[in-house]
Every structure is written in C-alpha cells, then in structure tokens.
Length: 146
Image (cartoon, rainbow, N blue to C red; front, side):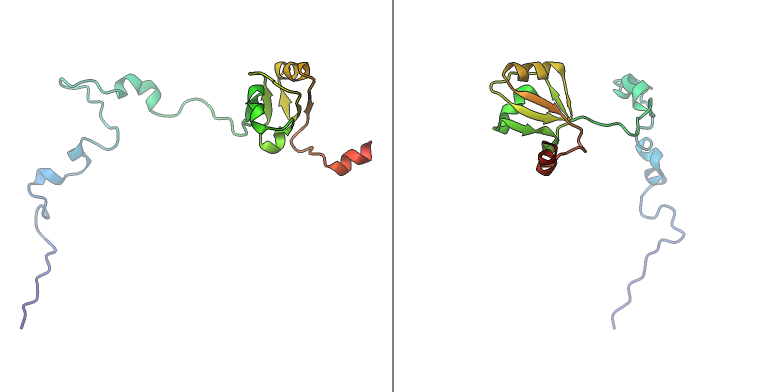
C-alpha cells in the first residue's frame, strides 16, 4: 500500500518558504510602490522625476467637456481626390485651409473655409460653397427650388 503524501500547509512556520524574514516583507522590499521615493539620498544620479516633478504628479487645469475638433484639409491636398467637384463634408472634413497651390478649377462644398483658400480657388475660376454639416441637400431639393 502506498503512503499518502502529507499536505504541507506550513501552519506555524515562520517564513512559509521565503527563507529569511527579510526577503518577503511587502512593498518596502522593492523600494515602494509605483514611483515612490525620489532617490535623492546618498550619491545616486538624479532621476528625471526630480526635473519633472511639477508637471508629473497630479492633474492640471481644466478639460472642456464638449470641445469640437475640426478636421481640416489644405487646398494643396485637394488634388488627391482626382475630381473637380468635391464635397468635403461627405469626406469627413470640416474646414478648408489655404496652404498649397490650386492647379485647376474646383467646385467645393465645405462647412468652414478661410479667406486665403477662397481667394486661391476663385483665382483659378472655381467656387466654394459653405454649408452646415446637417444641411445636406438632395437633388430633389435643388430641382424644387429652381
């Protein structure tokens, strides 16, 4: 008959398999939790946290809850669409900026546009129509009004 193995639950055992008492104490064993301790004692190299401590810890300022982000595109990037009639609202853009060159006549529908962008497009004989994102017109609406 085989002898049943004794279950070692280490009741009453001082260190429960961790050797000396020093070795398994808690967070102090590894110098604290997270970014605890500045390390400015003794002769160590100063950690970067000492330079950044004003900005590193805590929260600063306010966060605007309903901030609207604008997805902008420059006039110079419009040539990537390869058409002369572009509805930037449908493409997901909210603003047209004036950086870059316009090479051909363009017809653009956009929510917001800068003066410089309008100048560049109209100089080449094109047109810019400003339209709110939720005011998308269909062909039926256009036919009834004319």
